[in-house]
Image: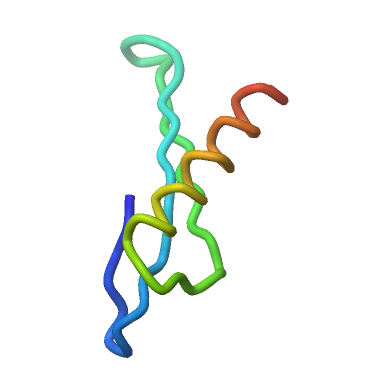
Length: 56
C-alpha cells in the first residue's frame, strides 16, 4: 500500500494476513522511509513483506 504525503512524497505499508476464521490476524507494517513516487514506495513494501514472510 502507498499513501501520499502533504509534501508530495509517499509512504509505504504492507498488510500480511494469516490463519483462518477466528484464528486469523493481520500484521500491518508501516515504513519510515519517504519515497519520491508511489511505485518506489510499493516496490519497497513488497520487498519488505516478502522478506518478512520468508523469515517467518
